[in-house]
Length: 69
Image (cartoon, rainbow, N blue to C red; front, side, top):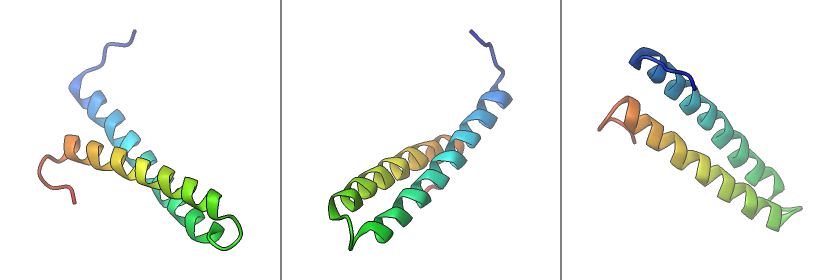
């Protein structure tokens, strides 16, 4: 098990937040692309996009309490 200081923990949270943001954008883009050809896939992509949005918002709140949108 790694023991990390608070600065390293914050860096890891920020990296996770950035990754969740990229995944959110990617899945939401897929939703639009799949809408006409694969409605079921588009719905799944929308769910994944919403899930990553939630993760990003939670991590935003941890990094900057009270400032997230």
